[in-house]
Length: 264
Image 1: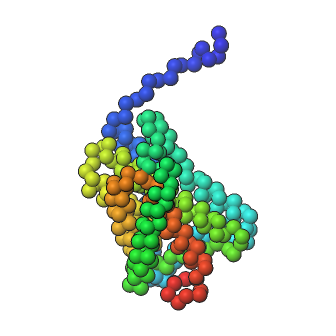
Image 2: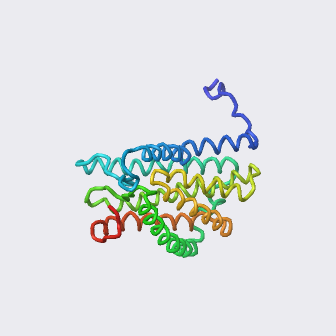
Image 3: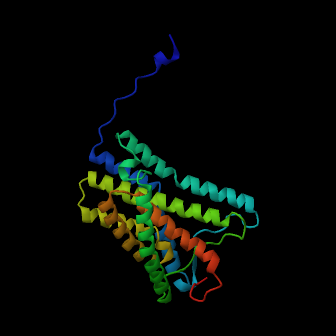
């Protein structure tokens, strides 16, 4: 008798009930942006209860992990970027198990030029208004000073910032828009409730930046949900998000200390 003859047979696939789908959604969010939302809330409470005002405190988005050791620093950043994408792979696996794929969310390259054009237009529309909202919120004392990059001036700084922007975009748009809206729809939620849940989650994990970061991302979340409903595709939203974050990260590196209107 071979060793394989003693192995038990694989169980039959379990039917995806609403309860299982709800549990699955909570687990995915608990491993990704839901946990980030709780972390950001704790950080915001800490900032509110600090002795300094919010705008005199800083929130560094891409800081050095091992200062003075650039190669180790690069290794850590690449590891963080790669590991942050694991929940997206989990979503892809869960969709595959139900007989679907990320293509059902419109996350593919089948319409690359159309997606690119839409992404550029959305980035241009949202990027400028987002910057104005941040500057206004900080001036009013409702936001921390956001430092998009605290990386050292080394050769890999710009590539890592671009990779970080792309990672943020893929994780957020695939999970918070495509996957979350799909699951909430399967759970029987109404469209307004789905949009509210997605947008509030997006705002929650930006709370570490302050009130402005929360409000701005809630508004962005609502817009992205409606664009997803109209286009049925996550890809243009991921492109727009990548462009917005890339301009913010790289623009800060190029402009910080050279223009008076940019807080540092």
